[in-house]
Length: 270
Image (cartoon, rainbow, N blue to C red; front, side):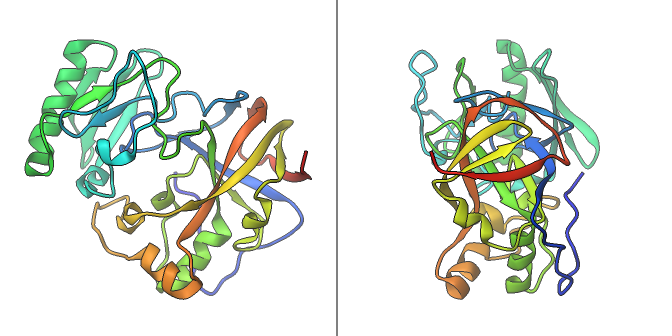
């Protein structure tokens, strides 16, 4: 389910209460999202199973015995491999089975906890992406590690009113899923979330510390439904606003379970 966006020229309702619209996680970096009815936020962690796996693009530098942050260029990603957007994936958190579908039909399925299961997915990706790869793809994972685009374990939040404003600047209705957020929220004026940097916000008793704006890359130019590279969002933002930022990063300081409809409250600094 895609968060609802309004037609261009029809502003969202803005009030004193920003609210969670949708919650997502991305079990395999670069592959499709999973919509959640609730999410348990734990201090110092990401949403459970968010970017839990990644697929190295050829022989890589990731060592599961000593996991560390690596730039996304090491892995399959939409910025370089837009054909990934044409695949739909289903991840079972209980069994770690990953099912890949194309146009609604299953094309591969494997258990990511087993060598054979990983090989099935790797072989599919090798055939599907072909010359885009630098070598044989390899599925990687390490206990407690998240393959986020930033080194810190955090949550990515995007204001849907800001997405609408990006649509106004590009002259197109924008699918919010281009921005691959964990939490999409509504009820706040466009760009107002940037005032939250170095502030704390509370969602259903969970407290988060906002620490950075999200600088966007060419992955946002890819239509998440078709895989077509049909826009130039970072360039448009830079030309219009002098920056290419959409979204904010926040670290979890106090945990709790959150759900769509929960209010986001600004609670100030330390």
